[in-house]
Image (cartoon, rainbow, N blue to C red; front, side):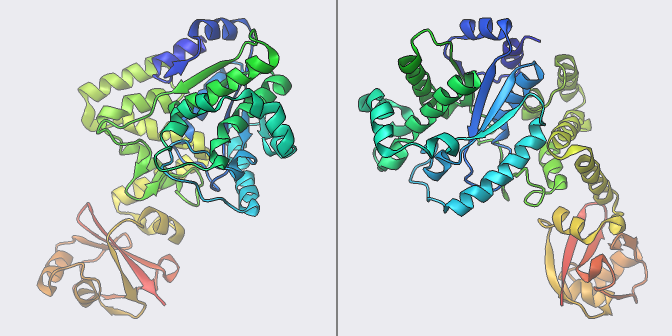
Amino acid sequence: MDIIKDLKWRGAINQTTDEAALQKLVDSKSIGLYCGVDPTGDSLHIGHLIPFMVLKRFQQAGHHPVIIIGGGTGAIGDPSGKKSERKLQTMDQVKHNEECLTKQMVKLFGTENFTIVNNRDWLGNLSLLDFLRDYGKLFNVNTMLNKEIVASRLEVGISFTEFTYQILQSIDFLHLYKEEDVQLQVGGADQWGNITSGIDLIHKVCGPKADVHALTIPLMLKADGTKFGKTAGGAVWLDPKKTSPYEFYQFWINQDDRDVVKYLKYFTFLSHEEIDELAEKVKTEPWKREAQRRLAEEVTKFVHGEKGLADAQRITKALFSGEVGSLSADEIASSMKNMPGADVPAEKQPLVEWLVDTTGFEPSRRQARQDISNGAIRINGEKVTDTGAVIDPAAHFDGRFVVVRRGKKHYFLARVQK
């Protein structure tokens, strides 16, 4: 597979230092390449997937990805994309986050032909004098000030700590070049300045003939111009405890027709031919949303595995059909947390009263009785047609929830208070 040609087709290349030279390099041998992530949190989100999808494609093409978990740089804080100083974390927080991110990386990349390192192992051994003598002398302050990452912060101010971040990242590239034979660094478009600083450092230390390269990825925007990966509920996390596989699956299946082909190219490993076929169906049969379904299946399976995908599909089917009785209380909690709802007492009540006075789901008792008589009301997946029925909120879902459905689309989640 021609990895560079494939990446261009997928719209995954923003800039390279020398595309022809990089093409020649990857054609001639299996190379080492890297991307880093700082442990600023205990989970990756889908925005982090953007550069790592590129590394995964290189891995599948026979190259060797190296991931830096930035225990050293994470203790400092990357100014990229930030309008103000990052809040420094405690070292205990950093170490906990390192462990969590390492587990997620192993899940994505496996253990074959893949290396995880922590830059605290080498940055943590640098004394201040070594840092200033061995590296500080090789960086021109004027050049550093002109890097977009720093220049964008000069008006509001930037600490010396964050100002030195690009030097630390450059040391990372130099270390991996010398110790792991890494010749390519991959990053987002905003990392261009940091990556090229690393290339400059390698050329100064190892000589101008050192064959090292940079590849950055375009900023990913949705068709409406907003940043990819953000939702009304916040970030979409890879940790299933933060974003359940069902919620993850729903994020992808609800993508706009204008974006879905771009995401199929970028976030799946489907062939060019398969994606072209799906793109045609977006044009000719958009109502079937086959491209969105395939996108959701492929990305959910990649991140959460076959079981995560199966669980997401099972919950989706249950909610679509209204047969929610088979779901667990935890599945109800994760899949319905953003639906309309109310807190209700655990005591039994006449259903009509409960629907009107307790929950406010129905506007009047007359309307409630009419909807019940017509078979429009389902409680916990079961149709109720008896207007004299009594509801026991503690009878299902471990006594935590009552799921009400009117018609095919109107769901309501009653949270039982004990």
